[in-house]
Amino acid sequence: MAAQKEMQNVPQSAQTDSHQDQHNAVVSLVLGIVSVIIPFLGIVLGIIAIVYSKKQKKIAPSGMATAGMVLGIIGIVIWSLYLLLIVIGILAYFGTLSPNKFLPKKS
Image (tube, rainbow, N blue to C red; front, side, top):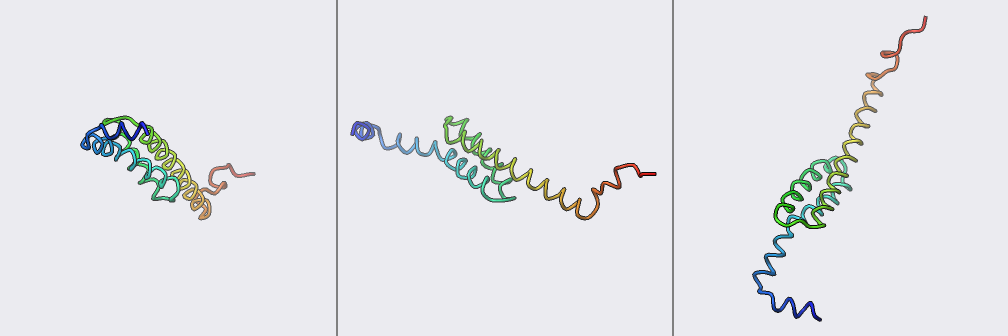
């Protein structure tokens, strides 16, 4: 009840400004979550989440912006490692990483 009274005393323009200030934080958080879930596209979305998080931190630091940055970094790391493992698997399958090429021949 007290929160409603406080919100009634705050001018409408100040209320909308605080919501607009959080826009980058919300975008960063959503993109960070999606970057962890969606394969391959998660790398790009993670980078975008980090950019929006940094923008938000310049305006007004918030926990959502920090969470978006952390999730964006996690998404980038997860899908980069996954992509690296796929490339190594493909190279190994086609014999490019054959142990015979790297180990000395037995006499």
